[in-house]
Length: 140
Image 1 (tube, rainbow, N blue to C red):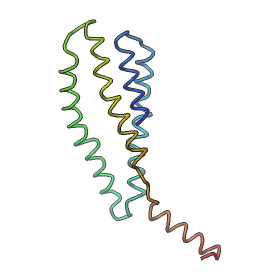
Image 2 (image 1 turned 30 degrees about the vertical axis):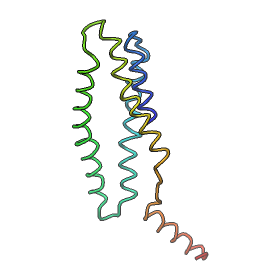
Image 3 (image 1 turned 45 degrees about the vertical axis):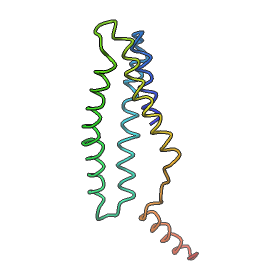
Image 4 (image 1 turned 180 degrees about the vertical axis):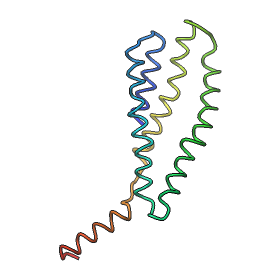
């Protein structure tokens, strides 16, 4: 989420002055943002869900992030765009800064909440494997 914050901040500060390097770095960060958010989410869901519901857990995650989340995100982003970018051409460049600072701030808040509130539980299969290893060593 911090990479998303950085990405949006690069867009915010790169757009008004047309600083291509900031915009290019922001675009390049897309892959890192996608991997660390979506792919790790799917890996985490697979580890936490049991074998019988692994597919359903990943499908539910996909529905929320790339279905419902994108739908509501597009509505919010469209409304935000219409409220913040009200002119055309060079006059709109400064307004793009305000537009991109909103998602940068939102991503920062989500990152802080995640760091403060997320407590990962060890996946059941990993705990089962650890117990089997201890049994083989004769410590259980």
